[in-house]
Image 1 (cartoon, rainbow, N blue to C red):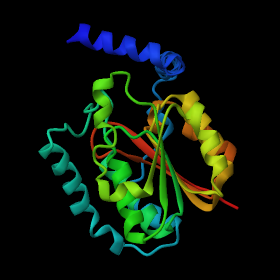
Image 2 (cartoon, helix red, strand yellow; image 1 turned 30 degrees about the vertical axis):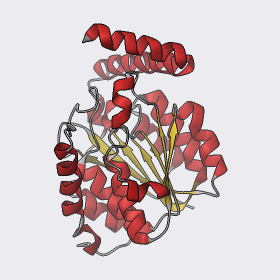
Image 3 (cartoon, rainbow, N blue to C red; image 1 turned 60 degrees about the vertical axis):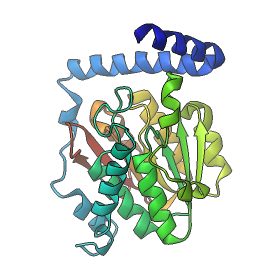
Length: 270
């Protein structure tokens, strides 16, 4: 199995040398982040997670709580997970060659952001099985408007490519543009091609270097009052550093439902 994987990975490196270089750089960045976290006592100490992130999000947006839009979300999420399991796809932690699927709390915040903000242009980095992508697209479909643009570096193993976005059914794909590649290759051109960005979702390579790059590229294109949802902020100080520099209208951090990770929200000021 390992020999077969190594052969497939080698063929992929030959066909896509720039992507291979990006993967190597990503590993180096991740190693640097781990070393930095150990030296400063652990990056999770930078954030205090709010006890009720969905309520906090609605307060930040000036919306009433409890939220009627949350009622259909549990059924939608359970249907997505059960549908994938029924198709023989592993779901959850480390289910996509060691990477996690989208967290339920993160997805619930995404759902409310889509339903309340009614975005015309949503930009997402990171797809994997596409659970968060599915949540966005279901929300856009209910809104009757909007398009999701997803940038994702396909897994190095071509055998996993058939699982990219597997959670997204054919009926929702007319609202979806999938861009295969790294955010450094594709993100700037994508956001500059759009009139503006109404919602940004970071769930790609969670290194300090990459997270800062994506936020710095997208933030100027975010409309006033737009939301940036950033996953796995606990791995490095990028979220805190960017928030200090960008001075958003409001921000908070929250814990994942599964595992020990954290996610964050930024709302852009005028």
